[in-house]
Length: 349
Image 1 (spheres, rainbow, N blue to C red):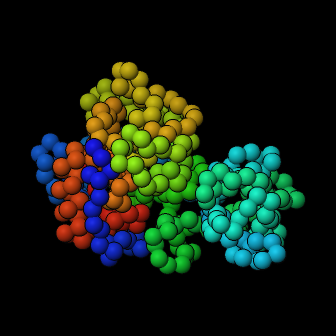
Image 2 (cartoon, rainbow, N blue to C red):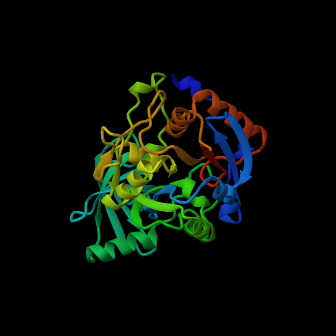
Image 3 (cartoon, helix red, strand yellow):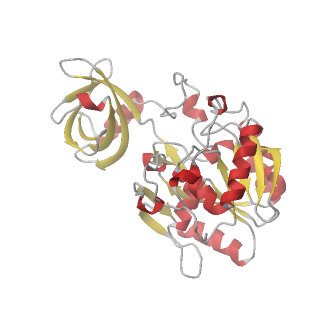
């Protein structure tokens, strides 16, 4: 499989700028690998495809307000700073992306807030847009984190061509988000409402939670024709014993294990035993899943519709089968399904 196998034309009007009014009323395309058939439903109809003892595995990462706007010392130029990951809590060192990057050099200072109550110094260049910042702040670490939350903005995707609204902070968070650390939401989970989860629970569907803090690596475009040469950025993840027990029990009972989202799938496939069971894990993963690939844990998955040439699309191709994935995407475009973060969903059985 080459990069060119994952290109397609996506009409601009199919990019979802707002989510469905009710989370669980987005459209749902159900793709059956065994019968090679496609059905059109609403997301809340997912209930009909699961039975007692089946397990849905959720990524409980929580998006933090990672986008800050500051001003460069002397010139006052407005600079966007995107917080990627904390490198050292004590020294307040962060890995960030800056825009416009050409103006930001080592030694520059950036000022945040109307009262310049937060200052950062650039101490290293990491990539063309990447920098290491040291934040200078007088208060305690807890007060510093509070200040970041106060000044930060929900990082809705760049393609959404509108101002961030107060509602986005809630919309762009799954209802089961707990562990703060993602710079983007695991978007397949955005379709679940409290009501739908309750109905699944009543039906006997179990939930297991893993954590994978979504970084920008998930969205970095692939730029090499030979997919084996693409390097994923590492993302932090945790799978605890409880999640393993729930998943492994379902597998041994021949029940369905459904990965809710590509990040959940990647987390599980990053920690598998030789007997194809899920192992506890705390650490980092840079696993890149592309065809051909033999999946060990989940036998179905929920996902959104992804960008051409993205690593996410490559995983879907590996799971779905490339020809069926292309057929599903062609149909999604024809039927006007909405793509990306706030878009519609696909259930692959």
